[in-house]
Image (tube, rainbow, N blue to C red):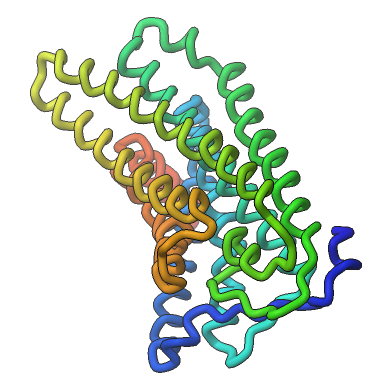
Length: 314
């Protein structure tokens, strides 16, 4: 954070949705409810998987990691956004903006790799069921999970440090809902050409490469499903794949449109809506898509609930 010494800006102003003051009250309560539901849904997933030994397999351990990421991602953005919606002039310090950007990139980058690892896990389970215990054992899971977190951390540290090494000499109004990289860079008083080349290349590697691997995995999965004899099994598998791909497309699509084009033709309001899609809706929908439609998860929830009821009675 040496860039702070070279900068005339000590704090930033987050504009959020200040262009629509008449809607900010309703948006505050709607986003607050969504945030609380997101926290409860992901906390339930993490708790159930932690407490139920039968769920200590790679598929659910990946899901537990994803819930940690979604909780962190949502918590990095939503509380500050609620402050912005409830304040006429919401400010965030230079260091606070650095921290928020760091964790947005950390959780976002880690999620990209985790979704890719989860697709590979489903590919191995459906396309190679007999050799699945060898292909995806706990040691492989640990390596993939550690790679996801390590890659996210390395990318985040480099990019955030680089962004805040630029001088910021005013204006200091960030026309966005959070300190995301493209919005902050618009205020930089320096030539950011080389950073944009790096950012574009990094986005290709971090967002589009896992996305392509996910699509290829699901294409193989769909071909395998089509060869299944039972129509009910095919229907269930198709439903699962469609749900997963919906979540993946929502996250990857909006994130790539934001980060692949820092100076894009999209209006500020459009960028804010795209940001909401992967920072608000994805963390909310993932518990529903990945867990509440899963019989094993629902069975584990009911088992823990019955155990609690019996414990309270006795």
